[in-house]
Length: 401
Image (cartoon, rainbow, N blue to C red):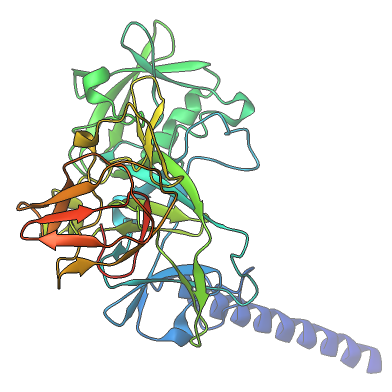
């Protein structure tokens, strides 16, 4: 009898254990019980893109603080992978249309970083991306002398770096044994230079529309139905800053350099945000993506041979640079009788003269020779003209340009 009872007890105990495990699994799957992942970010909490509560800000994340609300800077899907050989493929970031959430930073907003262990004392890496709009999930197309375009197999990794793995273009991986995969037509339209962006994406496609794409593995072709539901961003330029400050609100505030132009920026691989400069803020009409703002205007100006003509990041300017082509990224403030600024990297030369741009909100353009006088001079304002006796990379203390 004792042996029988002992056997029954074991069976009952096993049944109880199984029931407990099933209940726990159900609770976890339903969200009743959650566990923090590496970095302290809870998967369900990570989906909270906006909050007014500082207590809800997640460790290791970047936020745009605007009008009392913290907006999470999202990551998107990246074309590069440190674990795979993608170093030769230009950086691209993809967002599917149902998850296209990139916060907008406008004048007066704040950029904050949350971390319980890390301080960006060794530099903040800014990677700027050109906005190529909605397209199919293929980027970095390579052109040849005949005007045709293809993607290239990345060793054993297929078309990684060229194809967004979250899009329906991932079906192309079935052809991953083909060294060079050519696209000839999309919707019966030849894919040629006029239809391809600098980032190797196909332009002029309607968002969320399906297209028949004609791909060639050699002389044989295959049709794939692909959807233009991918917002593609391609590498534009990169630089490092060191300006940050501590606050008493458990946030680290990231300082923005004065030479920023309106565009899409990724900080330290943490998250993306869309920056709108003072002179462009008046161009936002409803959806910021549909505005007339030029998001892809480079900060560093180069000639057709790739030689740097103007680099405000390093404070460099070439004698061959035509100042008539120079545009000021931020408007000067004409309040009072002067615009007070601090300067560095001066070189001798003549004054800068700015005239007001009536097409933008208090925007100003450089008219004359962009060279410097003595440090410590003050810009003077007379009517619609600002004269700046000093040229440099500018840290504006009152207003800005």
